[in-house]
Image (cartoon, rainbow, N blue to C red; front, side, top):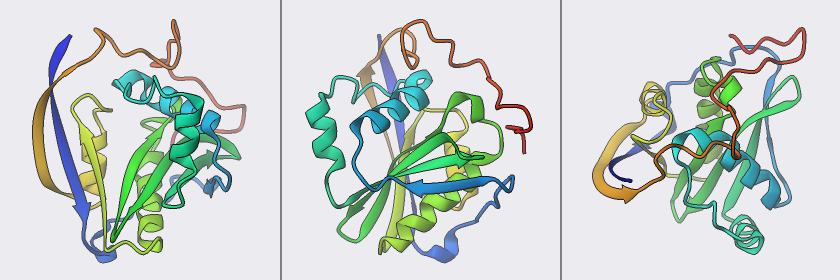
Length: 194
């Protein structure tokens, strides 16, 4: 179906503009993926974005993923809770800027208080890469809390554009038949709530 897609581009111009959110629990961490792993990035792309029309990369071959990830200007970071991967972000150095290219949590962990903290960490890592500006974009087909999270961290819009795009009638999910919108639970003793 054809739909109107409104894309909002947001930026932070200085590290002082970041409004950080503290970790919601003591056992959260991020870790950089030191060796490009197409399987890992594709997994997160489909698992995080399956409910939100992340479809652009679904047709990429293994070699396309490998070439994309092997670039020295791209970093992948995994968000962990109690040692379990629950989300990721990709950062791309672009001359003087760093873009948060992809960012998100697995469906079972959205609404848990992790998003603001993880975005804080992604933004801090962007500044550590030497950025003069950290930026991101989102659209009305993405998670409904994405734009609010970016704004809450201090990102301000610098461009809004609307285009017509062809999308499936419904989001594809992480794989056919998956019920990814239902919340799963962590092992006993690990709470997803903040």
